Picture 1 (cartoon, rainbow, N blue to C red):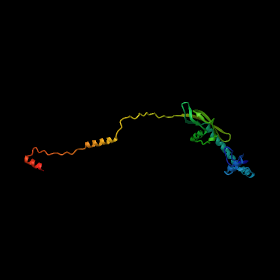
Picture 2: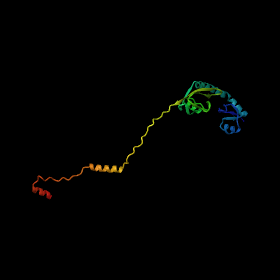
Picture 3: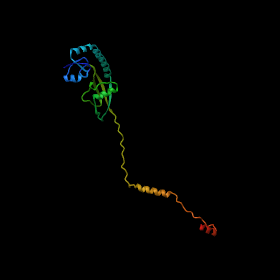
Picture 4: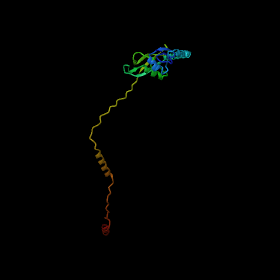
Length: 208
């Protein structure tokens, strides 16, 4: 069935375009979301009344696309990826990778607008990617894929544990206790020296 697009809808078309779509797609998706209008005399008249504003918006899109093309054509995007000694990447640079890298330098471009050869770039080197802009305008990005330096930690060899007699910690405690006891001063009884005392006094002292 025919519908009139009420908004830009990539990749179907732009606001004001008349398109042929499946009935289910129109009734279940486009119409409920306000993305399209039925192709009727009333809706045709409504869109035609907005035609001047639609054309102004299209012209602004053309100007924006030209400005973006000039920036992208002169851009060289450097992408650093882990790679082997032969330059083969551990993975691949895809259009999603390029989208993410472009966002880092201030360009918000949808992944589906970026075209690259094959299933992605899989080795270090220089490449080109095409960006689809507005209408038939395209830009070409220069891409340099560089190998990421992988730092390896030095390997420290661990010597095997030395084998020896098993230490009995209980004996250590016992020895420590005995050592401490030996170190403590022992009280001594000092007998009085009566060698210089007279016999009678000595007898009295002995009796005490």
